[in-house]
Length: 120
Image 1 (cartoon, rainbow, N blue to C red):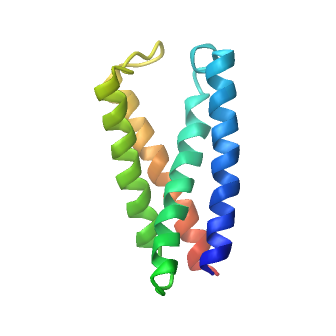
Image 2: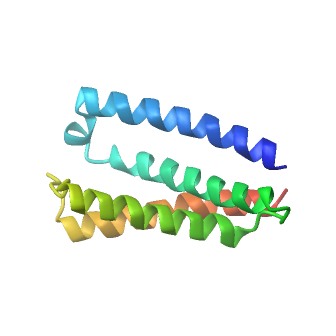
Image 3: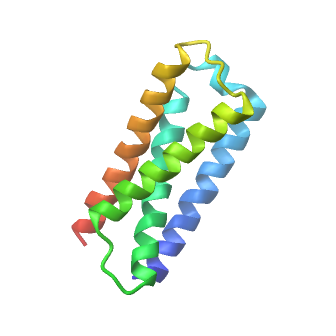
């Protein structure tokens, strides 16, 4: 199970990395107001997969809580890094609203992965 979760995480990471890199190059974050939404959903899904993988490596069954809290921890870490690096400008909304929206989408992505893992 841990091997399957690892490879699926690798695929999601590659897709997210490619989409994010191209988005920065093309300026999609400043052209489309909604472009941040799928990026954070996929980031939350990746964080949930990493949390589930950590459970599976230890021999535990991946649980919803592992995916949820993995997304929460990584989401808070990313938002903290954005703040510390000065990436607080958003042409569409105020920074506190953007942070809450980003964390909610991270949690939705992690919860989605947790739900899927609970059905396996």
